[in-house]
Amino acid sequence: MRRLLIAGNWKMNLDRGHSLALVQGLVESLRSISNVDIAVCPPAVYLGELGKALHGSNIGLGAQNAYSKPDGAYTGEISCAMVKDVGCRYVILGHSERRAIFGETDQMVNEKLHAVLAAGITPIVCVGETLQEREAGKTQQVVRSQSIGSLKGLSHDQMLKTVLAYEPVWAIGTGKTATPAQAEEVHEDIRTLLESQFSKETAQKVILLYGGSVKADNALELLSEPNIDGALVGGASLKQDSFEGIVRAASSVNK
Ligand code: PGA
Image (cartoon, rainbow, N blue to C red; front, top):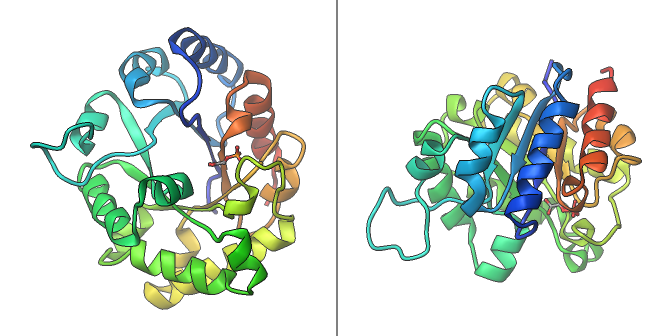
């Protein structure tokens, strides 16, 4: 049995006041949910303050990025020890926006992944194809190659501590969700890949999130698919009612 995880990726949105209000609202409204793991990933500058607001709640804190080096002359970067220090339990790595806008490669994601795991934080590693790649019939090839490159050198134990998120780039922020069948097909293939790289037992335990225009009204059908173990939510995580709706949908899934 894999426990579902719903993680909100706020990206570069919300100011300090709205961030705090959203977190306080979610702490109250999601207090009774005990069968789903929940996380919010706010902008880095608010992590410390929001970590305090989340303390003792059932909502984990996550960072949207962290650097692979432990310390030193890396202007603008934040180490894994720093994000851990302010209470982060999760770090998102290799989001398609980081790959496309900031030039992150599989090798960079892999270096960060090892650093995040060494710090005892749960990484959420993102992979996904562009529309052009999907239309060219390359979805499986792209997702497999990103997964292999990003996960290089992991032990079975480290793989079990890693969450993967399949996020088709064409579905992110566009309102175009992959159909449950399209998402499930890729999730199933990722699990097959993990089985060949690790073992059947390990592959069966890894949490695979779907991301890309997940909303309160499409969450249930996506999360009901056998290999979809939760969601990485962008736009719909910025409002209390929509994020709450997705968490409640996850909580009601029976599989
Ligand atoms: P979206 O973003 O839900 O706004 O499509 C998802 C993501 O980028 O993680």
